[in-house]
Structure formats: structure tokens, C-alpha cells
Length: 216
Length: 239
Image (cartoon, rainbow over all chains, first blue to last red):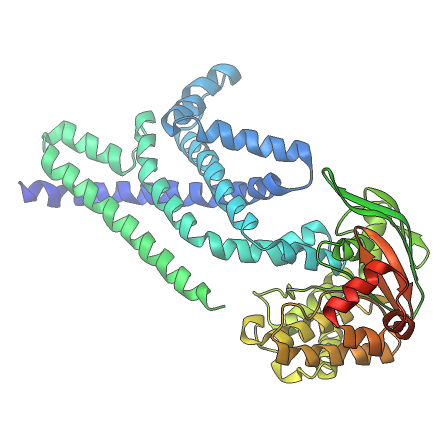
């Protein structure tokens, strides 16, 4: 093990990790927005909306993220005729992907709330949307924290896939350094360790949120 | 106040209500009794359309329930108290009371709070305003639920077995609140197994079995000289 190479590569790798965090955070944020909307649509009273939401979830969940990245980056431009910026493509593919999983998490959370809550809200004259917003979703969100934590960790790791469109996040940086130095063992170990630090941080944060919201 | 005609409700092949006609006058307290599975809860839930009737007419205060808009309008005027309280667990008692008046009636926060505190005073729980529902006993939760329904200033209240989920020693604190409401002239429809309450507070007792009203009479008459054979059998088992 050549530690000197690791030390020399650290700044480059950390810069890559910064980009990994950037993609993951943006994708998770957008994925959350998509997920809330689609998750609510999955249980709403409007049939077409419900079907559309189910369709979206099935398509995304049923195809690999890698293929989705290729579709957004290589296939779509052939239809539209204009190139997609790798950054936009990466964010789009990852957040559309994450949105489907988050939607399922929220759907489960919503459906786990006692029916009596919706009935109590409606019997007070609140509309379906008001009851959803003020009564069901806040409770469902709390229950969704643990699975959302899993999803965020998965997203952070899966963001390594955008290296295939030449986007220089952590994994791609590692590949490039190895192409120059042939130090596979050192660099991949370092890359793995950096991922581990990031995912461990998230899992501690999620555990903190769980503790905080348990007693409310 | 409440007018029901030819009300039917089926769940798949199961006919739960087979044609109900019922009128409830203003300030009247109607107590609905009957065996489990007789359809009495379903009847109550059809009054504010928590269950959509398969056929028939429900009219509240002259408004027939048809569209989503007038169902919402009617629900504002008809409060409901559930067997399992259904308080909002993520909100304090005070927030439980304030939510609907503020969102549905657009009442300002200060005014809603004043009103909520008055109602909590009335049900004897002013000191619990900032507690969460899970910190209260069952009886206290049910009293909060009644106060929450009252916060909408309803013209009528529906009670769906309000004491069935309570420990025996807590039943009276809830019944006392209901009695007080009845004396103040609230229009009430109460599904219950509390025959003492029916006798003391009810203006009329309605016996439901097999999805039909088999007998209705003032409590004195109802309990002393039931006409229907099934009513007699039911009463002999529970009294």
C-alpha cells in the first residue's frame, strides 16, 4: 500500500466527493418534492391521477438507474436534437429515479395512518386536501423518516453511476487517478472510505431525527 | 333538522341498511340502539356522508346532500364524535380545537384560541390545553373530541358509541358532558349501549336491527312496553 499516493490524491478525491454530495443533495431534494406529489396522487380520489402516479412508479422502479441515465443523456437528445448538459442529465435522472422510491415510501406512510384521522378531519368540514396537508401528511412524514434515510443513502451511492456520462464525481475522479497512477488498491480503498464516511454521517443524522420526532 | 328518507346502504352484496326513514327535530336527542352489526353506526355515518348511501335522501337543515360542495357545507354544521376519539396525535389539545375553525371558517388565531379555551373549560379540561392527546386518559380524550366538534359551532352532533372504548370508571365523565349539551338544547343523534343515558336524556329511542328501524318511541314507553318482539328480546338481554 502506497500511502503517499493516497495523500496526494486526497484533494482531488475530496473535490469529487463534494460533487457527489452536490448531485445527491439536489437529487434527493427534487426527489422529495416529486415523491410527495406522486405519493399523494397514489392515494388521491382522482382515478386518472392515481393511475398516472402508479405508471410512473412502475416504469422507474422497473428499469435500472444506469439505463435511465443513458436515456436522459444519450437517447433524449436524439429526439430533441439538442445536447443535454451532463450535470442537468445527472440531476434529472437521479431525481426522477429517487422520486419514484420516495413516492412509495410516502404512500406507505399515508396508508399506515388510521382511517379515523381522515374521517375526523372530513367530519369537521375540512376538505380532503386540507385533511391530507394538516393531519395525514405530518404524521405520515414522521413515520417515513427511517425508510427515507435508506433512500438517501442509496441515492448517494447510486450517484456513482453518473460517472458513465463522464461526470467527474467521486468514483470518476478515482478512475481518472488510477488511469494515471495504476494505484488501484490505494485509490479504490480511499474512495470506498470516503463513501463510507458520507453514508455513515447520513445514517447518524437520520437516527437523530428519529429520536427527535419520536416523542412529539 | 335532519330528514332521512328511504336510506339504503350496501357493501358489495351485504345490505347493511334496507330503507331507513328518520326525522330528528331541532333540540331533540335521538338515541339509536340495537345489536352489533345492526347497521346503527352505518346509519349515523350516512348522515354526514362519511359513508355514501347507496340510495335514499339525507337532508340537513333543508339542504339535501348531493354534491361534494354541499356535503362539505353540511359537515361544517354537523359535528361527529367517534368511538375511538380520533384526536390528531401530532397536535396539542388546543391545536386540535383550533384547526377546523381556522381553516374552514377562517377564524383568526386569537379568536379561535379564546373559543377553544372556553370549550375546554366547559368540558373541564382547561388545564390540558397544551398536552398532547396521548398524555390524556380515554375519558379526557373523548371530552376533548367533543370540545373539538363543538368548536365548529355545529347545529347538531352525532355520537358513534362515544363510551364503548372507555374504561368503566371514565364513562360517566363523558356522559355528563353529553347530558349538559342535551340540556343546553343541542340536537343530538347518539348511537350507544348506555341505556341509562337513553332513558334519562333521550327524547326518543330508536331500535335498529337488520338494517331497519323496528321501533321508535319516547324512552319511558320504549323501555316499559316495547311493541316489537325483537326489541323485547334485545332489551331482556341487556337490562
